[in-house]
Image 1 (tube, rainbow over the protein chains, first blue to last red):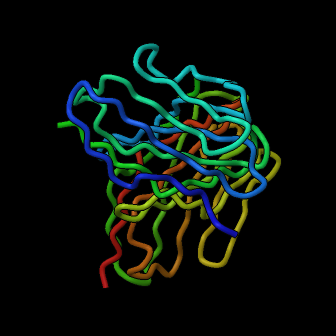
Image 2 (cartoon, rainbow over the protein chains, first blue to last red; image 1 turned 30 degrees about the horizontal axis):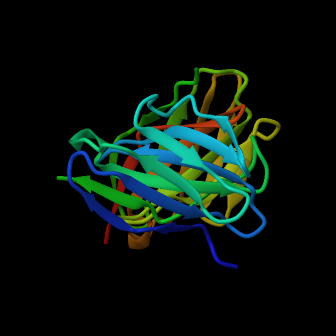
Length: 114
Length: 110
């Protein structure tokens, strides 16, 4: 079984450009979580999605950030008009069910804003 | 919301010795506590977890203990090996969200 896949692994964007990060969950998992990790810090929850629904986006900045998990295809985290402070590692995790169930993480996308 | 604190931030042990990492949490509604190992440049990997109806769980050299009354849980690694060197994160689950500690960088000295 393939694990959680994320692409690209590394992404460089200039200030003001858009960044699109993709996440394909493990087979059979319909719950996807996005986290941001700054250097030498823990993971900060951003958003939790199920197929075609955003369940909890309380950790996501209200401007410039959006996420989706369409019926077909990967989940996408979109950052518009990136700024240097957006530089971080973004991790996606998937789970077979919500709540008290194991989350499996992808390898992450490292975003650098120049 | 939940607040998870993790100590120590760095830990060095000699190969073969034990390592202990401790976490505390604030929300008594949290019921699921996973531990993750993260190697450089990789995503976190689940290594062990515990639910609130259990006080201790062991998997080979790794064990986790949970004290719900005191709201703390710990990771124990025995007979450490150089390949155990990594950053370890604890987490607590409340509702839909997982709250992570700030990580412990473990170095096992050969």
